[in-house]
Image 1 (cartoon, rainbow, N blue to C red):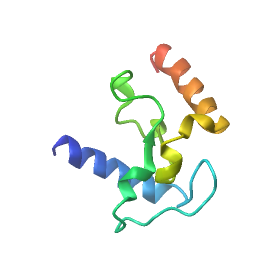
Image 2: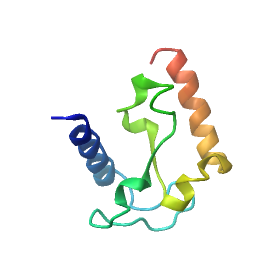
Image 3: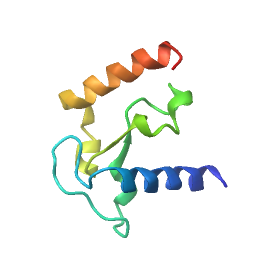
Length: 92
């Protein structure tokens, strides 16, 4: 499976495991047939800066596309980011 296929598979797993609401605002998310569906999966730790966490579900938050653009203004996002940074550097 190519990298895009792996990421899509991970997104579908996350979709099945979590509520279909933004983890930032609680607003309903778009369903998989929507053109912006994949924009609702935001990496908490950047893919290039933290490559080991690129394909970890715990590094993905569900949010609306407009929230994705300002994710760092949400305290819950910043809390999760700090937790993951600490975990990353403990090599977990």
